[in-house]
Length: 346
Image (cartoon, rainbow, N blue to C red; front, side, top):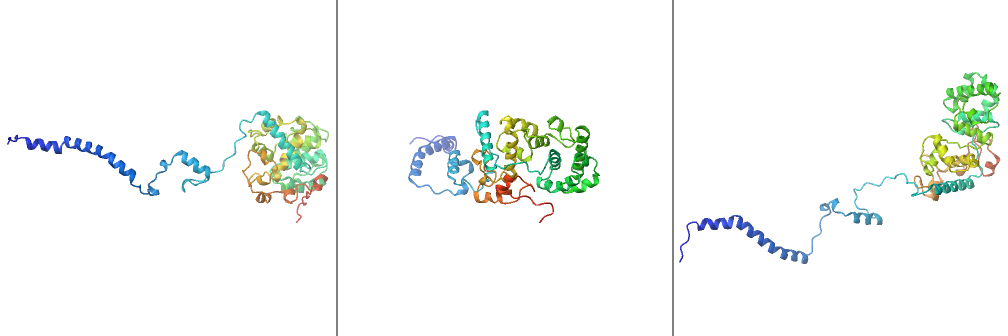
């Protein structure tokens, strides 16, 4: 029997408890891995609790498939907020012109009786009524002007009026002090500079107190038959919804939209758009489900799309309500329009 070296016990200890032992363990584990893997394939996997699945583990492809099928990916996913619709993709200028003109043709069929919704009998009454319509409705102006024109029928009469008496008449229209100053001022200008007659040129009209381009085009188009685009709040809102222009300043909107139509159509275009804005395409909740030009509108869906619910949002003659004018054109009455009541009625 051979003698055991003195350091044999120490060497064995190092071999078993030291690095050699660890290396041996790793090698053994590697060899054992295939067996474990095979066992794993055979043994059915236990269901993993939902709480242990992280959101990151869901692939983008799976999310897109579930979203397309309408299946909810997670209860914690925030609801999608409605966003403003994009303009028609790759719409050329020519395509825009065609779409814009088609919209106008469609509106002309819906509102063949479109007209200025201020009561007037002559250019003087129209320019005064238009100035008074700022920051109020045409209806309220129409209810107020009969008393004003009964007392001051001509520019000369209104130019000499007592401001306090005029203020009292105009009080229902709001901002009555500023409006009194404007209508008396423009009456004096008509008396002193234009022989008591309303001028028929844009450059002359805008010199009158309280008269801007919008008022001037209302007067030119409806009192003198000269084409003009009336860019009021309704017109601005709708042409941007329809993506006719992205401009926000009235004069730039006027120029952009004017370039899409023949000049001869400008006045009636204004009436069609404003009529539609007041009756169907409202500012807060447009009646999309009752809109005759929905297929042509990039903003379809901003308002109520259910046809029955949308019908309840219609205003004026479309919803059986009175219009803006106390004395509307006969064509409007023939179409089923209802005259507005006078001030203080019912």
